[in-house]
View 1 (cartoon, rainbow, N blue to C red):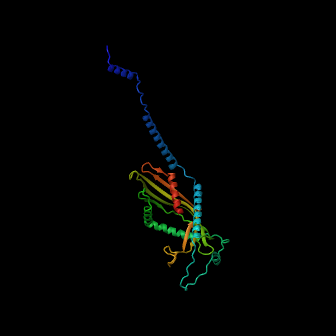
View 2: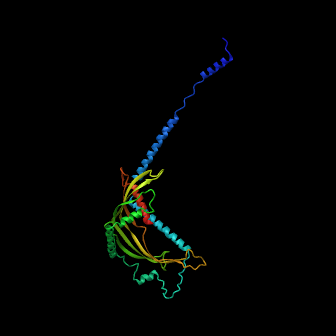
View 3: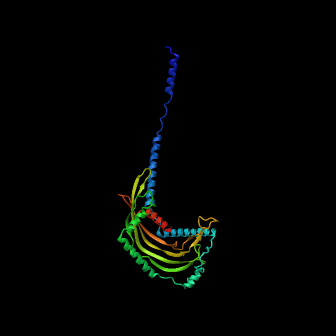
Length: 332
C-alpha cells in the first residue's frame, strides 16, 4: 500500500506527540500559602489582643512610693529649669529705674531691705520658733464648714462643675459628661510649723530679696467627684463604636509645704513704645503668690467601670492615666 507524504507527516507528528510525556500538574502552593498566612494573621491578632489586655488593662501599676519619688524628682527638675530660664531672661533684659513722679506731695520712702523689715518686726529667722497656727486652723475650718453647708442648700456647685467639664476643653471623642457623685469630705486641713525665710531671687524687687512664709499642710479626708460619659470612636465613619465609662476620683491624702510671698510690682517698657515715643512704662501690680514646694504628696483613689453589659471594674491602667493627668494639671 502506498503512503503519501501527507500521511507520513501525520504519522510522525502523532508518534512524537505520543512519545512526549504529559506536563506535570501545578502544585497547590497558592491555596496552602493563603491558609498559612490567614492562620498566622489570626494568631498575631490574638497575641496582640492578649498582650494589650494583660499589660494595659490588668497590668499592675508601680508602687505609690516609687511613683511619688519619681514625680517629686520631675517637679524639682522643672522648678530648677524654670528658675534657670527666668535668670537668663532677667540678665539679658536690663532693669530700668523707676521713673520719677511729677508730684512732690508724696514723699519718697526709703528703700527697705529684708534685714530692716525683720529687725523692725523683731523677728529672727535663726532663733524664732515655728508657729502652730491653731487659730488659723479654726478660721479655715469654719470657712470650709460654711461652704459645705451652702453647697447642700442649692445646686450651684453641681451646675458649675457640669459647665466646666463640658466646656471648650472637652475632647471630641467624649460625649456629654454627667456628674454622678460629689462628696466634699468631713475633715479639715491642718496648717502647722509656719516660719519666715528670706528669699533672694530674680522676682525680688527690694534690695536683699523678699520674705517668704512657709507652712506645712496636711489633709486626710475623702473628697470625691464621680462622672459618667461615653467614648465615641468616629473612625472610619462617625459613631463606629461607643464605650460607656464611669469614673470616681477621690483625694484621700495631701501633704506638702505651702509658700506665701508678695511679688513686688515691676516696670517694663510699653510694648508699643518706640525709642522716640513717650508712652509710660507698663507696670505689673504687687501680687500675693501661693505655691507648693515640689516635695508635696497627693494620694488619689480612682474607681472605674467600662462597658454597658459586661463591665470591667477598676482597671489599673485607667487609674494610672487619670492620676498622671491630675498630677500634671496640679503642677501646671
